Image (cartoon, rainbow, N blue to C red; front, side):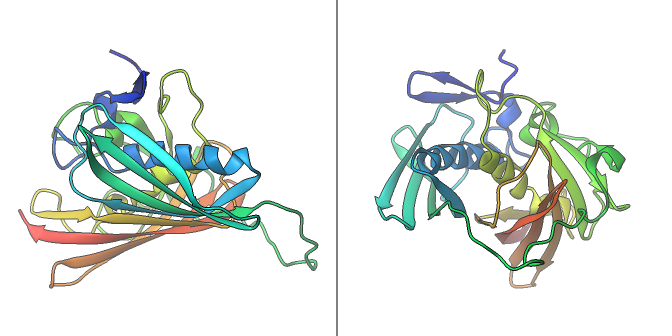
Length: 262
């Protein structure tokens, strides 16, 4: 079995058990295909000196633990702004759709003090506490063996807001280096899990989408989520995560949540 989360077989990306999610043993964690899409979109952007400023995913249903195809393309060209679209397709059916805003990279003269790199809340990853997903379910999964997790600022998997550092625990695609944007997307999909306010055994609170806004790319391997979740008795929720790396803030992420009793 490959040590990577995915391996390439021609045009297909074949998932290993490290892509599995917590809700269904036959389905992937949303962060796994999101990272693949982010990587593909980032390649489009970098080819022409652009940067990914916003990336929005719509999960059209469970993403089966099955071979898939990722396709990305520019749908609105431009010198300063471009729009890109991407799909994850399994057996001819789209299971994830994404849309991205790409902005031109350049140098801008800014007044002193306009940008500030502040330390991440809760301290750096080396001072955070290594943690494992709560026991139960399959041994391999994106949340268990695909990503490394460390809680900061005295937070943990208990209910409530969380400060959680993430990095890939293994290659995203065998023999390939993931892009910085892929690292951000992989971590961002964990917001609703680490800041949960409901019990995994009693409730389903799955995100139907993921929107990421970046004012810069992550530097280094680690991405921190400063995450909070709100859930209403109507069965709708929202998880919002402020994204940081070891140098400071880099963007925000939001997830709409579908909630129901198990």
